[in-house]
Amino acid sequence: MSYLKRGGGSLDYLPYRLAESRLLFRGPKPDLKGRFVAFLGGTETYGKFIPEPFPDLIARETGCASVNFGVLNAGVDVFLSTPAVLQVAQRSRKTVIQLPGAQNLSNRYYRVHPRRNDRFIGASNVMKMVFKEVDFTEFHFTRHMLGVLAARAPDRFKILKDELQQAWVARMKMLVNIIGGEIILLWMADHSPDDRQFHHDVGHDPVFVKRDMLEILRPLVSDIVEVVASEVALSKREEGMVCGEMERVAARRMLGPAVHEETATRLVKYLA
Image (cartoon, rainbow, N blue to C red):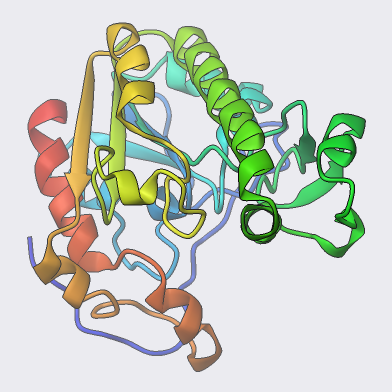
């Protein structure tokens, strides 16, 4: 597998809709009649700014079609609320689920947008009671809100974080049980699930997900593949990305093509 040179301009993601879904997936629209591997995940699976995200690299390497159901900033909820995706995944040869963060799902404390899971819709009465001093109308995104709450009330924030982690485990169990068949969970990040310094960090994905949460899911799936980006790959973060100058700041925060190469290399042996 070879690295791509850094480019300018913007990518054409060839967006399409699946059946009745209102979600836009990265194209070209796949042929679902033959054998294929379904990939569910967030921004990395979608491959924002990435000419060839890891599902494409794997398809080229294995010769088996890859169906990319990556959704930008996806939480678990977006897939559970999209029957068309679940039905296709149920027919796949194997399904790879990139592990999402725990911040972008509805729970007892707040609601997120059903399709754009990073969007904060509103706080529950329980949330307003726990954080009485906070005006929740100032928030539009979950990550911003959680960062502010963690800084203002770290003792009470633990209650919210525990709720998110419990909801994440329950929702992930539901997702893998609905899809069934051979499922591979993918940890794709710049740190290990064992790294404690990231267990409370809202700035690094997958937010709040740690080892014991993965182990709860292990008996329900075929494999859990952990890809922790190497220092070399992280140092090449922007190399090969295609984006406009106004998007460059956002691109710097993402995992670049070199990490997609490492991810594809690790996953190939599970999907060949």
